[in-house]
Length: 385
Image (cartoon, rainbow, N blue to C red; front, top):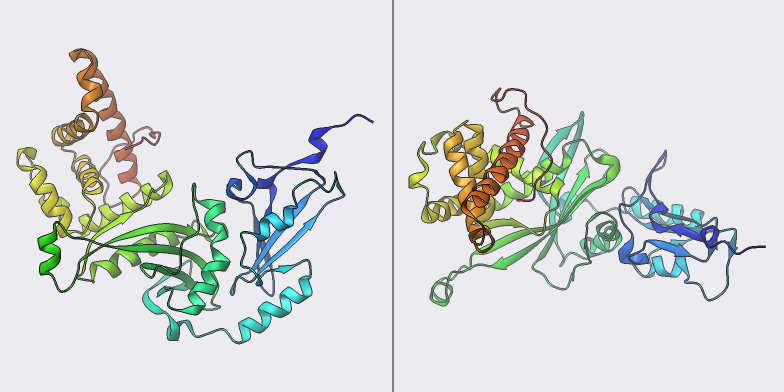
């Protein structure tokens, strides 16, 4: 019989993830598995391989079951052991489903009162269900236990995601929980940096200002399309806006989907505060000092704030102002490369880039429905800002 490598090879992205409760099971697949199974995301050495990774939807107690029809030899990598390296040690049930159900059922009976051990920072309603956003830190032993169970989703759904060090107490955890049954909908990890402009400023302050960063941000796939991401992001931002020591809010390496969410939420905030309507019609007064002062007033990182102002002028249909600001930012960012080009080519490249951004911003604003401000325009492909 001819040897057929394809019969012994399986994509590791075919791993099945399930969230279970007493009545149902919802399953989905990861976006990526290379942090666990390697860059090729292929598992070799098994026929008819099936990997099931299940979690109780409330406690997130994990369960692993690996099945296959035949194993090539004893030299191939042990798939189960490889997966267990990334799950909480001595806390993951393997193969024995009855043991797993008994274990998480007992945990549910003794589930701590979240209102007693976590800080409630927001509540909201989506699709007639009530949700609570909680904040905690890793002095809380239950928060550490939860994160160890949840963190594998970072590897599955965040490009270049990695586990955090919970012994570093500048990390915090935010959770979205369904109020009726304590099911966890999503979570975010955040980090706090000290922020000061110079040593003299640092030495003269008894209360040190901070720069707070959203790091890992996940709404679990079965709960997406319910505006939970927007609610979670805004809950965190509002919480930090109320804290006088937090001077700047930023995000670590956002992907395009999160970038859009962030632009929408930050722009809506500026709009609702009346800031957009008060922008100067002539942008000659908008210099670096103006950007620094106003970005600081709104606790927005400076580069993010510049893009929001560009979006604002597109929203206001002040084409001249939008064009000047966008082209100026692009030129400053790419000055070395552009200065090597002929004047006509440089002008053409800046105009093409401006046209793309104007279209992208226009489509982003249309999704906000703040007011009927645009004619029908073609949908833009996402540009790298």
